[in-house]
Image (cartoon, rainbow, N blue to C red):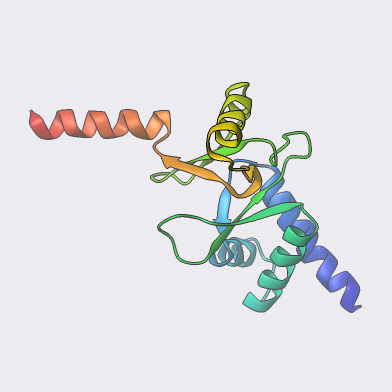
Length: 145
């Protein structure tokens, strides 16, 4: 019985993240959404399941700059997250995959010029996504008018 109990929470969490792979959520957010969806779980159960899924490399557990605690995000099997950096929008919280040829140039430059080996899996560049940047520009225009 106990095994089935944990399985339904694990399945819910995987589904929760996999339907929106750009979604990044804290333990508290997952807990609230899970309970809202009728999955009555305690916070310890949510922590345990999220950490197990991170250990199994189904979710990425990351410390986001400027935030307390960790966040989790679905690892898309075909995205090669250990080979590219991630862009984090500090306004909306979305995480984008920077999986282009430019990544190889960055990694090569860092290695040759600085003797530094990049750990892409846990690396993020913080800034504003296109939508949030445009919203900020519109807000500034409105304030100046």
